[in-house]
Image (cartoon, rainbow over all chains, first blue to last red; front, side, top):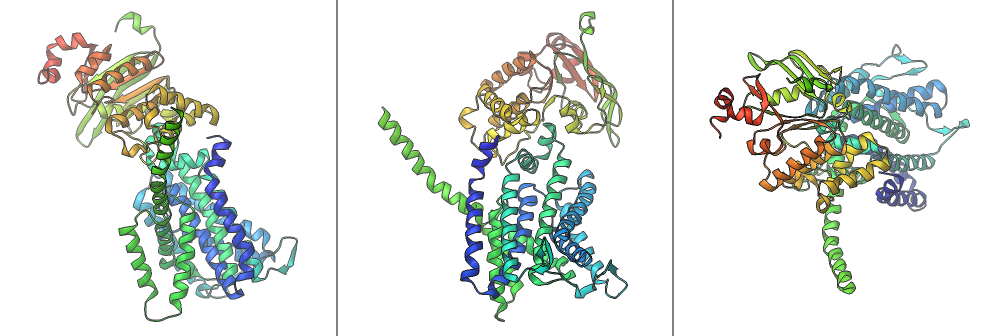
Length: 345
Length: 244
């Protein structure tokens, strides 16, 4: 695929990105500050969903522990920002730590030819190990540099500051801009990546690993690559998350959050990027709304939604809508062609 | 072996190759030689070890003992992608395709492995034309008929422009017409590449065969032309006797 083809294939990506940009500038004028702060958290989670959409939807790697990289990014950012006294390099550290960890874990998993459900089990186990490990780090003995890890209470995350001035912290409405911009950039990046040679080979490996190898592609390297990249994106989500919430606790690594990420991608649709992002916002809004009442249990509703989608809309929202539109448009296009032929003869 | 053929370059050689599954000797002590630009068919009854031998050549199985040498390189323990990267085109017994992708994308995946974006595009179009897949190039491969899928996979092999082609039952499940076309294609590929073809269909082998290797109980029973094998008593007993 050459440059022009890639741009053409990315057209929907640019359309959604543009909608995102409009929303980013309009939202602070329309919505209340409380909603904006809440939205920042949702955006952080949407970045996490995007990272899983990339590695699972396009790479075919069911990573049940995508929150591990998300949480690792959040912790690395917080600890680095406390030690550095500024946030700019801490963001880089967060992405590096999560990617490096994913690269090491991925090396053993992919080069050991672990696949399918075992991969899900291993990544989930790693996540739960983080959960137990960090919960046990209460007390003054557990610290990295100047930063106490804080056990199950977590750590207060220093807010983002301007890159050139470590004393001018960003206000919540500004963090919203940063988060939204990060989500749009990550989305465009993923949209570009899946249309490059690398992205298309990853999709090929997802479809048939043996065939990819028979063509001479080293599937282990490609899987490791997409796994590492998606971990880096998840870490960006983690950085935004601890900025939105103001602190990071080991609960980020728990089973509930690991499963939730999977639900977003199932509901949104594997094989799309915008679907899981939209599903995250939708379900985030739903859980917030349900939080205000006490008739229905939150988890019960989520469980019902998951079962509903797995049974009735197995492809997820975005692919189902796309199918519906192409089915409706196809007969129209044929009749137009027929009319054209009629005119020319 | 005749003296004339010894002068050509040896491109595939196995020495004392063995593949055992527990107590079963699926392939045992196989010494096999393929010369450049040769077209060789492997035949034998079910369970004779043809496919196991094929998988040892393509790196899908790691042999218990012995060596595989492809153009001077020891590939006995090589990964499948490393063998393919030498310039070997492989078609497996059960069609292995990218089911969720279109015909076009399937062929492109093969062409793009070796060429830049522009050349890969044109090579994909050329291959689709050559394989007569133009009408279905936008179709999703998973929804195609079996014969068409076989052709897409052959197209992927051709698009890689290999110098050695390994085909496991390329005519399986094809109609007579498709089989004849496949035979023509194999002869065409043979002008540029050496081939090893594992086949069951005797009609098909008669269409393409030059030299045939007969497998029996994991070992090579004999190597000769199809006529000689048809007339050989032992070969008929193990294979042809209950067929032709």
